[in-house]
Image 1 (tube, one colour):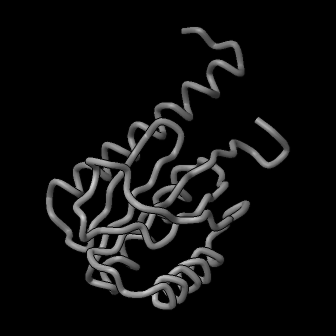
Image 2: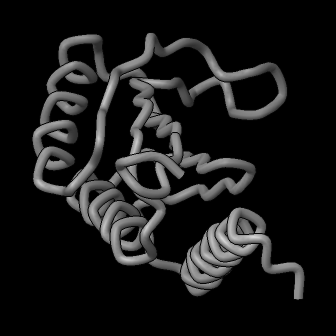
Length: 143
């Protein structure tokens, strides 16, 4: 833990279902970054986006943008971040977002299927469990 609390790095990858042009991707990324500024995030940094790893996505899908977000692992902030990403996807009505926070990964789509809701809750539970385990280890609590 540092003076900023429990900080963790999350990687957010934005995927399009089809190539919509670089200007569109840049505009969407800028809009998302503006929305992210409303959350109490430590830092948001764009990464250069690239093609999907071989065998992981269809040929029609391509990575529009990638962001590295440094945030406190407080449950309310992690939930707020996922909620913002879900809302942003729903408004676009296409594509997907892959989020990696530590060893935990979550894939969001523009639809609100039951399986996705279950995956989100599992993601929250896993992140919170690891955060609590890290605090116990730091305090020397082994029980």
